[in-house]
Image 1 (cartoon, rainbow, N blue to C red):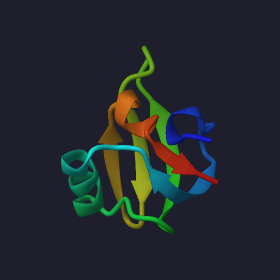
Image 2 (tube, helix red, strand yellow):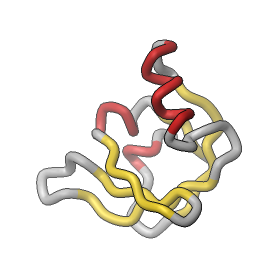
Image 3 (cartoon, rainbow, N blue to C red):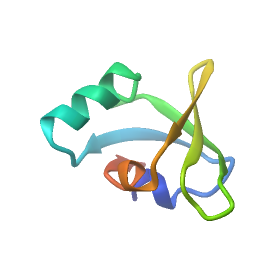
Length: 72
């Protein structure tokens, strides 16, 4: 399952990423690493971007980026 398809309010754990190296480095710098727990907080009215809570801070991610993050 991808992060983009995760229901609102559900906490999931990152299991992998399907991105190129530059994009995966950017996501890792933000704290999105394998094993990290992420909660989907809300989506914009048109679905892009989505707001996720990672630890004690919130991030906004494009739906295209969230679709490449595998979660369980």
